[in-house]
Length: 290
Image (cartoon, rainbow, N blue to C red; front, side, top):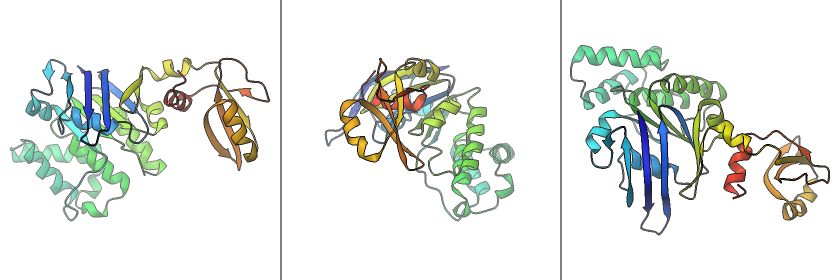
C-alpha cells in the first residue's frame, strides 16, 4: 500500500499559491512532511483528507482514486488535525463510543471492546472517566490518536502533533506513532526537525507550496557532507559575516552566537567543519542552496 500524489496544485482566492505542482510517493511506514509555518503542509493534508478540493492533480491510495471516491477514502482514513474540537465535559470513553458509532461500529459489544483497546493502547485507560477538558496537552494528543485509529485506517495523517508537548509526553507520543507506523501509511506533518529525524524513514521538505526534497533523511544529510562549517563569534560580527557568507542558521550557545554556513570549500577565517544534520538540510534547502 502506498499513497501517490501527482501534480497537485491549489491557489486560494486571495492569490496565495499553497500547492505548486506537488508530486510525492509515500510508502507504508512513517513519512515526515517538513516545512516552516505557511509552507503548504496543512493545505496538502486537508486535500489528502478530502476536506478541500485542489485546483488540479490526482491522489491515489493504492488503487483508490481519492478525489473521486471520497467516501471510501474517509472509511480508510485516520486524521489528527493540528487543532481539533471535542465536547469538553464528555469523558474520553463516552466520546470514543460516540465517534465509533458515527464511524459505523453499531454493535454495542464490538464498540465497547474497540474503545477499551484504544484507551489501553494510548495509555488513557486510567483516565477514561475523566472529562476531556481536564486532559493535559499530551493526553489530549493521545486521545486524538485514539479517535484517529477507529476503524483500523490504512492511512493516518497527523498534523503538528508534538507542538507544545513537554519532553516526556513527546517521547510517549513518538513511541505510539512508531508502533502505529509499522503497518500503516503515516504522514507526520511538522516544522520540528527532531520529530522527523527520530521517527521517519522517508521524508519531504516543502516550502512555498513546492517540494524541495523527497527521499530518506540520511540521504539528505549525506548530500551536505563537507559543506557545513561552524564558528562562534561576537554579536557585533554577525551582520558582517551574514553579508559575506551563506549563513544558514544562527543560535545562541551560552550567550554567544554560533553560526552554520554553507560552502563547498573551506571558508577560512576560523570556521571549523561540522557534521551536518537534518536541521542543516532543512535550512539550506529553504535558502535555495541545494
